[in-house]
Image 1: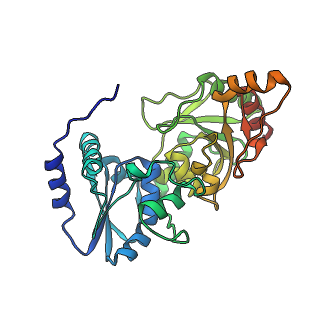
Image 2: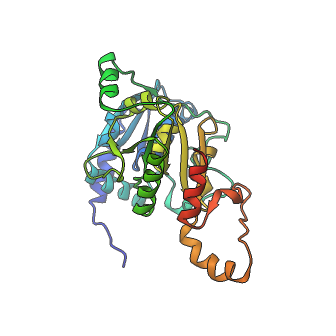
Length: 324
C-alpha cells in the first residue's frame, strides 16, 4: 500500500524560491545522503561554470554542514532538518522544480528512473542526467580539514593503528540491505585468528560493533588521517566507502550484483579498491535452475568479472580471506 506524504507544497516551493535569492550563485539541492553529497559537490564546479555563476551554495541535510569537508567554489551550506528535507524533496518532485537559472536539484528526476543508463556509472549518470555535463567534466575531490597534533595523538591513544595488522570493518549501510550479522562475526573471528586487530566503524550509538571487534568512531578528517595508517577497510557499499575512495585507503568493497554502476572501482578509478559482488539472494534460483542440473551460472555483464560474484556467504568469506 502506497503511503502518501502530506506536505504544504506551495509553502515549501515559496520557501525554496526565497532561499535561492542570489542570481549570481548556483544553488544545488542535495536531498540524499553522503554518497550523493560527495558526487554533487564534486561536480558543482563544472555545473557552476556551465551556468556562468561565480560561486555555489549547497542545500542539504543538516549533518552535511559538519563533515569537515570544503570545496574552493562552495561558499556555504544551507542546512535542513531531516523532516524539512523530506518535505522539500517531495515538493521539488511534485512541482518538478528541478532546474532554474541558478538552481539544480542534485538527484535523478523521477521520470528518468534510477536505471537511466546502464552504460554509465553513477558519477557519469549524474554528469549527463542531473547536471547536463559532458562525460569528461571534472570531478573535484574535497579539501579535508587537517588534524591538530593533539587530535592525532588522541587517535593513537584510543586506537591501535597498524599498517600491517589493523583492519576496519564497515558493515553498516543505509542504502543497501545489511548482510547477515553472522557473516561479519565469522569474518572478524577468522581475522582475529590470523592475528589482525579488528575494529568496526560505527557512526553513532545505534550502530553496534561486530562481535570480536572494538568500535571505532571518527569524523571524516580523522578517518582521512587513519586511511593509510591501517591495512585496509572491508565494507558494505555506503557513503563512508565513497569517502574512503577519495583517500589513500585500501578498500575491499561488497556491492550488490548486478549493480556495477555504484561500484567505487568504476566511480573513482583512482581509488585503491577491489569489489566483490553479493548475489546471495539469487542462490535459491541458481541452485534450483542451474546447479541441480550440473550447470554453472553465466554472468552476462561486461562490467563484472564472473569470479567476483558470490552466491553464498561461504564463497564470499573464502575470497575475502584469500586477500590476507
